[in-house]
Amino acid sequence: MRSQVAAFEAPLHSPGSEPELGDLRFRALMRESDWMSLPLSIRKRFSKRLAAGDTMVYSGETLTNDMSRMGWWLAQAARLIGGPLPLVRDAHAPSVVTVTEDVATRGQHWTRLYARRRGFPQVVHSSKRFAGPTGLEEYVGCGIGMGSPSMRSLRMSRKSGHRFSAKDMRQSQKATR
Image (cartoon, rainbow, N blue to C red; front, side, top):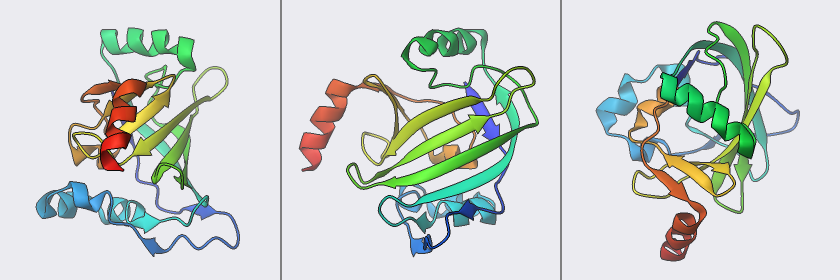
């Protein structure tokens, strides 16, 4: 399953927040040439460190949302645990992404709102954690998550690599303590 979202140029954020702290967590997961190949707007977005509990809001457009037949079935089945994957293949639809710094896991909570051509928008929640074999995992709830196979996901084109369970995460957290 792959989703490509347009670069969000103008972040909206709550008054009084200071999101200009430097963040090297995403940058550290990539080779220099890969990082420099990303558009400047994306490098800036993934270099902002939010203060504990602060939220940044980005608005933009979903350019494409491609998924195989199996990916579509997986997304439909995942509705049983809250619909953590995009359900439709709508392209060129408005979307909003909020990123909140998570103090407890030293990661980020992401909420994505995908407008749909028919019906209400879909809201997807996940937690990005800087852990696991790839250095970046996306936890979607109910003990289920997926790792990023490469940092091409910073382009917002996501293909999931390894899957993991809550048991795997507990073992990973013990190892990092």
